[in-house]
Image 1 (cartoon, rainbow, N blue to C red):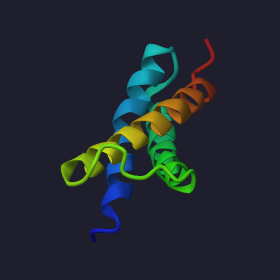
Image 2: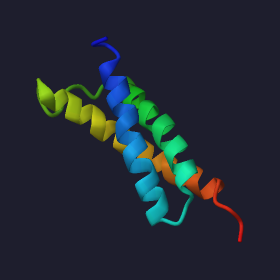
Image 3: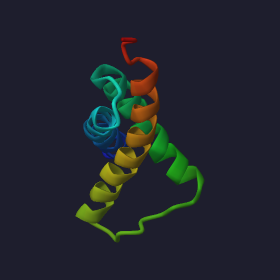
Image 4: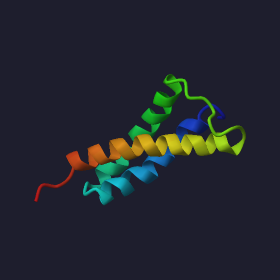
Length: 89
């Protein structure tokens, strides 16, 4: 279970920040949520592939870094998905 915790935390970070940023910038909440979760997991794997290690240190800070990585990736993809799924008025 320990190896899945950073992925789950990244998805949670993206799932929280994606819809918030999407709604602020005028997108839909549903698109922001879906894009946020997918972008959060993608942000985690992207940071891992880029060689970004434990920048914040060890212990609980590793989990906070996973939340932040997911939040950044989820925010970006959440805005894009929120704008695409926005109802046309």
